[in-house]
Amino acid sequence: MSPETLLEQISAVVWGPATLTLLLGVGIYLSVGLKAVPQRNIKRAFLLLGSKSPQQEPGEITPFQALMTSLSATIGTGNIAGVATAIFLGGPGAVFWMWVTAFLGLATKYTEAVLAVQFRQTNSHGQYLGGPMYYIKNGLNRRWHWLGWAFALFGMFAAFGIGNMVQANSVANAVLESFHIPVWGTALVLTVMAGSVILGGLPQLAKVTATLVPLMAIAYLGSTLFIIFSHLDQLTNSLTLIFTHAFNGTAATGGFAGATLSAAIRFGVARGIFSNEAGLGSSPIAHAAAKTNNPVQQGLIAMLGTFIDTLIICTLTALVIIMTGAWESGANGAVLTTLAFNTGLPGIGGTIVAIGLSVFAFTTLLGWSYYGECCAVFIFGMRAIVPYRLLWLLAIPMGATGQLTFIWLLADIMNALMALPNLIALILLSPLVFKHTRTYFAKK
Image 1: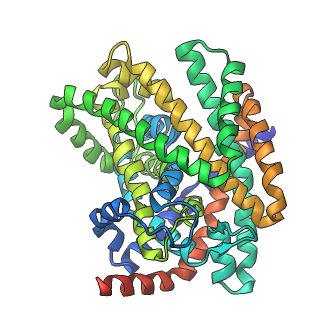
Image 2: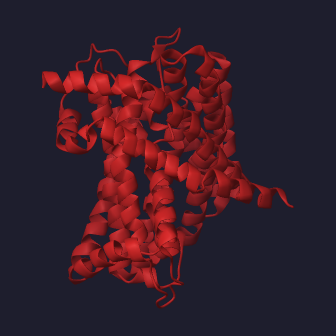
Image 3: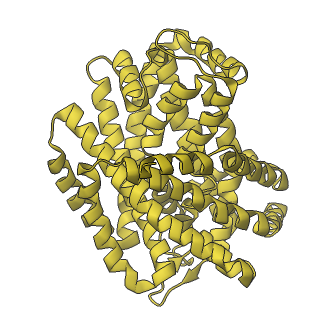
């Protein structure tokens, strides 16, 4: 058995029904325990996002910058290629299960951020550190501390794969196919651009993501909305397909091979979690650095990441694919999304997808650099920062120019293993989150 075959089998197990059920189960448990507070307070969260945080509050970056840093890591290839893959493998019904995952993920992401702010700590330089490894270390009994080390180890390796080399490879291939720029040229530009941001630390990274993420998201959403309004007569039929196929599966049609109900659920849930990362434990690392004294308020802001990522961006991508009829072509991944955009915007649709994929992948590379660095600092201390950043930059050209089947599979496994320590901690610490939430809203 080849190493790649072995990793494929391991990946199928760690991302199998047990893990997906656990992720959904924790989302249900937290939603019930919180009495759907996150789901019922989306408007309040947007209002909090627009309010100014006092500069004297502890933290390194503003709550808005923390959200944008988190979104920079979550809005990526999953929103463009991942949605298309979910529809290719699970049919239009997979979109419904992506919505279910995101709806429950609001409570999970909220809980993660509340704990990240509650149990964060500062280092010798006054910088704020947090995330699953710290709320495990500072919130749980010593017998659970090994889970924090496990999360940091898995997160450090996953970052190099899914957050670095895979993203660099996606950008290089998209630019090569659309603009015929050689891979080595893209690798060089990516490395220089990433270095100018990453070597400046979190404040510099937060400033760049706070500018780049909203601009690209608005431009991408504008394109999707134009296509949707141009095919408005297909909206009702497309929504009907999503809801009916979510419970009945999809018969073969055109180039589409068909999908069972179990496939719709499996790939909808898996791609939803891959896209918004609720439960994986990555985004609370960014929210722990926010300038705030109120964990609940930052939790409300944090959950907007899942709302924006999946319930808005992924939904609009899915509607474009279904409303244009591209989902019946038999194409998959970024090719399917490109076909849909070319159908809706002839001549420029493919270019929009290539640019969107490139910018989203680049911001993912930036966001995950910080996540991986924090994991390395937890294990090795502050002395790991400079070597880690240099290794991160060296990995970019390796990813852009290499064949990444092995790296992708390994990173996929590490990504799933990150979730397990985090989910255990969320369950054990959930009574504290419930208490903080009740106290906060009682005052309101």
